[in-house]
Amino acid sequence: MDETYEDRSLHEECGVFGIYGSPEAAEMTYYGLHSMQHRGQEGCGIVTADENGELFCQKGEGLVHEVFDEARIARLRGDMAIGHVRYATTGADVLENVQPFLFRHGTGDFALAHNGNLVNYVELRAMLESTGSLFQTSSDSEILAHLIKKTPAGNSRPRIYNLIDALKQIEGAFAFLVMTANRIYACRDSNGLRPLSIGRLDNGGYVVASETCAFDVIGATFVRDVAPGEIVTIDRHGLRSSFFATECRHAMCAMEYVYFSRPDSDLEGCNVHSYRKESGRILFSEAPADADIVVGVPDSSLSAAMGYAEAGGLPYEMGLIKSKYVGRTFIEPSQALRDKGVRMKLSAVKSVVSGRRVVLIDDSIVRGTTSMRIVRMLREAGASEVHVRIASAPLRNPCFYGVDIKSKDELISARKSVEEVRTMIEADSLAFLSEEGMMAAGRCSDLCLACFDGKYPTALHGQDTR
Ligand code: SF4
Image (cartoon, rainbow, N blue to C red; front, side, top):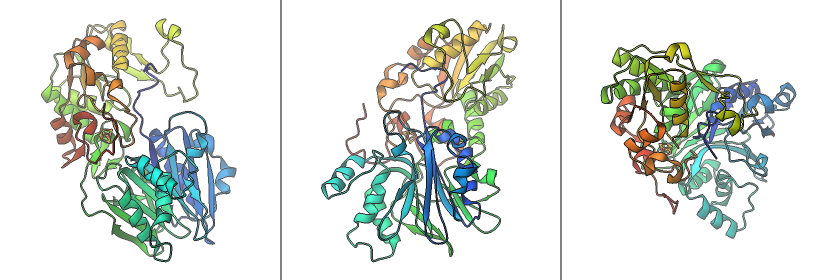
């Protein structure tokens, strides 16, 4: 599919939210999921549990405000809940893959929600099917439920040991929320690839979410992040910590900082806006441009553009405007109309860019077609020069951890040099932030940079790296 302004091409796979000890658990989850809508727009769901241990589930395809109304929320009884927003590939039976998944079982019902991707999914599923498991979905997330119920010690011991045994068998990226009749378990993979944070409500209850922006909308206070390899149990005794992995490291997905997360979220103590702004400052020091104004591609590149402008003593200008009202179901212009100049989502501000030498800051280049169109748009609006600066390193490798970069084929920088990419996107100059610059921007001890440097933090279990 051709990349358009309407499709920035990279997608996060999901966001998770959980709440314990709130009389408005379902409503709070609705608001929490809404604040993380950017992490997935194709489906969402909420499962609640009431004081009798009964679990209630509502989910559907679409945005949070499309799936839920007051009547559906009212059917979700209880003071604890988990919820999920999903980005998924389209196709038949999408609804069956919408989470949370609710499992009915003789030893107690439970639900789970997952952000991330399991790299050993295929072999685990084959193993489980060969021993009688019947899968209800084609999602890798369902694996955990089967593993929890397959542990050799059966179901007579405390449930957390089954969960620990199950988590030891899966590899890849995950932030899992598992909810039983009386507690929520929040689990994070041993590399901390996907974010997961804990917050506190005024009434003493707890929340857990992929991003801290979800805490702000419901008035919760940040407590701490779930550590890599940790299971945090939330129940009437408060918080308890256990670990399923002994060898853990912090290798948060760099693209969470660069592109996916909301600027008002803090990931492992680093604010996303601040990271992006610093990356822009470093980008200027690495690749200054002789220009009149700095323009960022809205929305995710604006912070980096501010940093670049500040560092270079250049005016930061609103040279590109993004329409807020182009929704998921908007009828996109045909190629013929686009060729005639119909642009629905992004347009250049002529009076700002006309006659100016523009530094265009973007967060990443995937196929290159979006960058080329934006460069052309700025030139058509009268920019005399367009110097493109990218606030991340060249994307050269697929991701197996929950971001839909499926092969090198879709990455222009995997096949072309920087100069060849510059020619293709028709820029006067082009430079990328270095991998060192990406690390330095967050003062991070470690980040996953695998789609940039090809150094994957887990075994790949036969995944195709071409
Ligand atoms: S490979 Fe790239 S997109 Fe995937 S987790 Fe690592 S940094 Fe993130």
